[in-house]
Amino acid sequence: MKNLILIRHAKSNWDMPVKDIDRPLDSKGVADAHLVSLNISNFVPNKYVIWSSPAKRASDTATIFAQNLHYPTDSIVYKGALYTFDASQLEEAITSCESNFTTIIVFGHNAAITNFVAKFGTIPIDNVPTAGFVSLEFDTNNWKEIRNGKTLKIVTPKDLKPKKKC
Image (cartoon, rainbow, N blue to C red; front, side, top):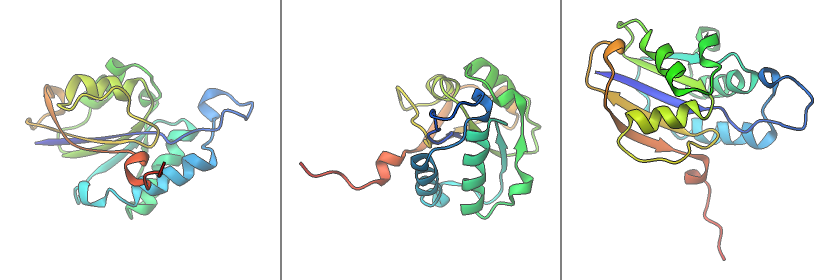
């Protein structure tokens, strides 16, 4: 069995005149990353590895999650291949994982994450929102052989915020 948790980076700050890869989180993104990461521990196995896109917004999101999950931030693996918006490139990065890892938590970007979840998951989702968490399970012992997965859990910031009264 292989478990994959995909987390879209939290909301980024578009007001800063920086390259795309250097764009930081905005204050809402920081708050949402904390909100989701503090509410997913029951859906994360005891042993896992964290991979992140090197983009600042993804790496900052990964750091927030790691801190709140008590995972050593210096053990986060930054992979250039995860700085992609293409699901097939994301799939290629994931299927390159060594089989000795049972669970990978990946921090990346849309549309790659939404399209990957649509292809491999069992719950239809039009868009994985920023700071969105999706847990998938694959009935295989080899990452190269992932096919149809099962969606175990989806958590979004909206799910965790109080509903607004009319």
